[in-house]
Image 1: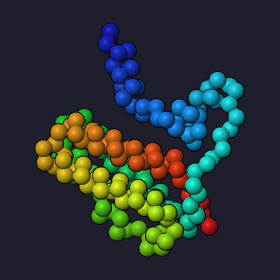
Image 2: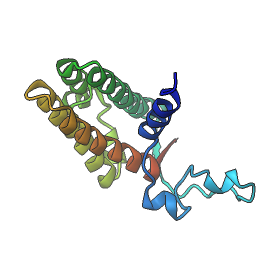
Image 3: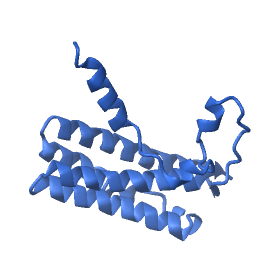
Length: 163
């Protein structure tokens, strides 16, 4: 039991994202550091608003939840030493999943958002290829880090409204 606090601290350190420049300057949406000190003013949500139909919004949010489910499955597979399972899970968020999206979305999504989304799907496919091939956990974790950076960038920069 003497190692429990050390393991708990390590688990917490691994679970928390490293501080980013945006978080350090206090302008990151959702940043709660000042609120913890009791002197915070509510932060203004400066994310770019994208107006979608209810169906389109539901589809985009479902895709994002799929990304999160894939990340969870990849981490679990790596923790269990099963890179082939990580590959199968990553494929669920690769380029193939884009075929189910409403066609009307492309005209409504800003180019930078589309590029970020495409890059994220491609990163999941690249992770799947690595996990299927050599399966080097360190390489896969670096790829997963890049995927999560895309997710954080998207969530920090955009929000969806219904029109």
